[in-house]
Length: 138
Image (cartoon, rainbow, N blue to C red; front, side, top):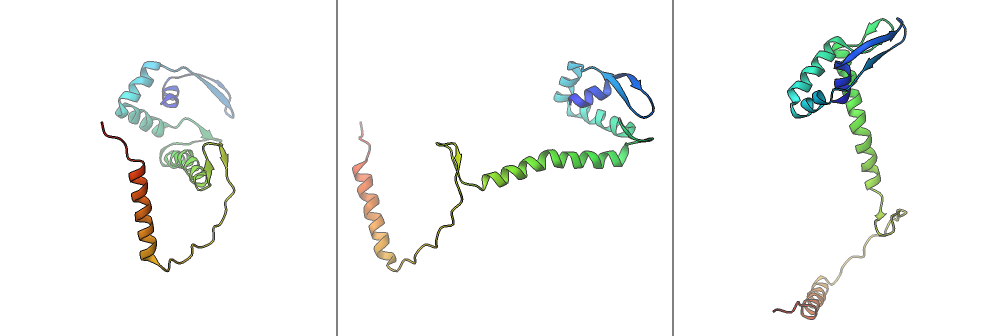
């Protein structure tokens, strides 16, 4: 939104045919208006897309070519952080120690031969836990 406002409020340009700079100021009212009214922001973007704001040698970049560049920029701005955070989230992290652990491949779990006996032991342990640590009623 700020960049759009700077482009819309472009003023005096200094330089020559090869390089230049344009003086521009932010109008905070326009920035807030474009934040509250997305339709206004889209109109500005369409105007900038039709005219273009920069060039390569003598070719002013506008229209479809500028749209493709903006899409690539948007994908990079959103895609790279998402991809990097996805890669980081796969690593084991300890919040208490604020450190990354080394990955360790665990061996396969052994096969449970006596399923019913295991289930009964777990049920008994859960029952003992619930009876022992039951909250008192008032």
